[in-house]
Structure formats: structure tokens, C-alpha cells
Image (tube, rainbow, N blue to C red):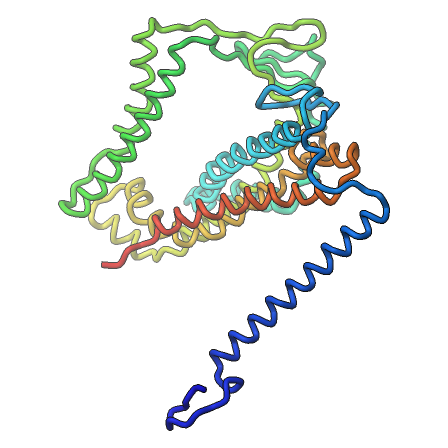
Length: 391
């Protein structure tokens, strides 16, 4: 038995710590019993109605086509591969959407605080309009733009060399396959690593000696220069795989479907409006005296933003920015409304063909839970790295 301040024994049900442990055990047992009841009851009902259960259907032939795929796929492949195609499509649009939303939102958020009246008002107008229009309506709008305003492939618009716009999507010329491009990618990745190491060295050098190193210019020179050197060493290959009209559609190059472009534009433009407000709030959270002090010691506006404001604003920006990233990933499930084959769309087709809705919905929940947790883990790690360290 526990003892109080006077040294007297008290019953365990009066001890707050032990009582809290008992309550947690009871709640855990109740939740476990409820879960057992729901699962057993569901399995019993499914068995009584002769409905197949389990994930054995994943090895069966899918027998349906998917319009877009990042990996080779045909209707003869299994349901497992079809679901993998849908998951990769969701991952593709979510990753590209997050990157573009953060970039666009940051620019608009900074523009919202501009001293230029017109720039600030235009940024504010964009934020108000985009936030007030539901994202689903925006998807329908951009989807209708392609099918209602753009011509057929035979009358495709040709605004730039190697670019064709039509109601089948956007066809873009790409460089023809060549060994040089693999080495150029390796050189670019090496430049990224060197830039990161140089940034750490420059920050440590600035903290110890107060000297500023031009990390941005040197890093940009390496990111552009290394691949160009490799390209020059391989004889500067410049052959292009240009889209050509064959029959009723374009062949060659890369074609982005109207569904993908509409989904990406809708998600990016909608989410960027919220990201802009997050960035604006983060910048405004920094005391104006910090800016005045930085300008007083001779720092330029760009240096004030990069060295003084943003490092302090990040601690306010990152948590709500993580929420917006998660919202974009979850909003990508609206792709089913415009026909883009994301994971939800492929899973719905699988459910309709197999009749195993419980397993299908469970897979949808598991995939989006994995994407959300992965994003949260990465952003929490970055938040710890970006946190201010007191000295």
C-alpha cells in the first residue's frame, strides 16, 4: 500500500498513480472486447451469407485496364498490381502537388506582405477566392477547360516547339534515350550532396567567425554545372523524342492526361492559398525589431529574409504546413470524380468486381494512413532540425 505525507498507508484506489493505471487497463480491455465483438460479428454474418473473405483475390486476374500507369500494366495482371498502380498514381500527384503548393504558397505568402499595394492586394484576392471555392468544384472547372475549350488532337494548339495542347492532354517532347542522362542525374545528385555539406560548413563558419559564404550562388553553379560538364563530356547529345500525331492521338514524348493536369492544378491552387496564409502568419510572428536590427547592421533584404526571418518563422510555419500537406494527400482521393485512376478509383473498381468491400476499404484506409504517417514523420524530423537552439 502507498503512504501519504504523514507516513500512513492509504488504499490503492486512493492513490492517483495506481488508480490511473487501473483505469487505463480497464479502458484497453473494453476497447479490445468491442473490437473482438465487431470483428467476430462481421465474420459470422459474412459466413452466413456465403460472402468470401480474405485477401486471396489479390492474386486473381484484374481484367480491367488503367489509363495511366508509372509501371508496366495490362488487364492480364493481378489485382495486387492494379492496386499498386493506383497507389503510385496517388503518390505521384501528391508528391508533385506538395512541392508545387509549398513553392507557390511561399511566393504568395511573401507577396501578401509586400509594400507594393497592387502586389499585396492581388495576393490577398487570390487567397480569398481560392479558399472560398470548394476544391471539388475547382477540379470540375479545370477538367471542363480541357474538354470544352481545347481542340481535338488534329487541331492541337502548338504554343512552343515540342508542346501540343488538345482535349487529350498535353504532349511534351523529351530527350531521346542516351547513357549521358543517367550520368547527368548522378552528377546532379552529387551536386545536391555537396551543396548540403557546403551549407552546413557555411553555417558553422558564420556562427564561429561571422563570415557569410555565398551558398546559394555556389550551390546553384554546382547544380547546373556538374550535369552540363557530363553532358559536354558525352558529346552534347541533343536528339529529342518529339510527339507526333498518329491516327487520333499523339505518340512519342510524354503526354499528361487532362485528368492528371486538372487534378494537379485544382489541388495546387487550392492548397497554395492555405499555405500562403501559413507563411504570412509565420513571417508576421517574428518581431519587427529583428528586421530593423538586421537592416541596421547592413544586411540586405534578401539576407534578412534568409538569415533572420525565415529561421525564426519556420518554428511557426512547419506544424500547420504539415496539416496542409496531409490535406492535399487526402484530397487527392477526389480524383475519382474526374476519372483519374488513383488508388481510390482502382480500389472501387476492384470492389465492384470482387464484391469484397471490407477488404477494399481496409486497403484504402491502410494506404492513406501510410502516406499520412510517412509525411508526418518526415515533417516532425524536419521540425526538430529547424527548431531554434538556445545558447
